[in-house]
Image 1 (cartoon, rainbow, N blue to C red):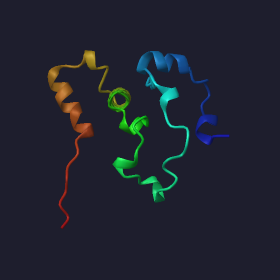
Image 2 (image 1 turned 60 degrees about the vertical axis):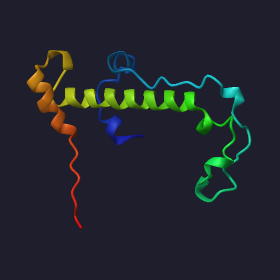
Image 3 (image 1 turned 90 degrees about the horizontal axis):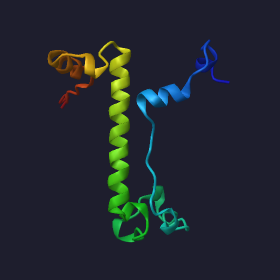
Length: 115
């Protein structure tokens, strides 16, 4: 059991959440071409040199990697929009230019030199 979920009185409408926010939608167009053997097992912490990665592995497939990164970026954007909405900064289409600029501060990162 999950104490957080158990405290929710209403069932979660997963389909409505997917409709509103989307979901992870990446797929591999060449799954049968991927190596079947564990080529990383020979390396501690699976820290494999780039030259030893098989050409058919996803790590060497530029199309796969680009689609994976695009899908990951879209997922982060959707998550940020959901957070903005939860804190009253959305939906995006209802905000003025100044409000959009102000809400960007929620995810502003500052690099602090502590040396």
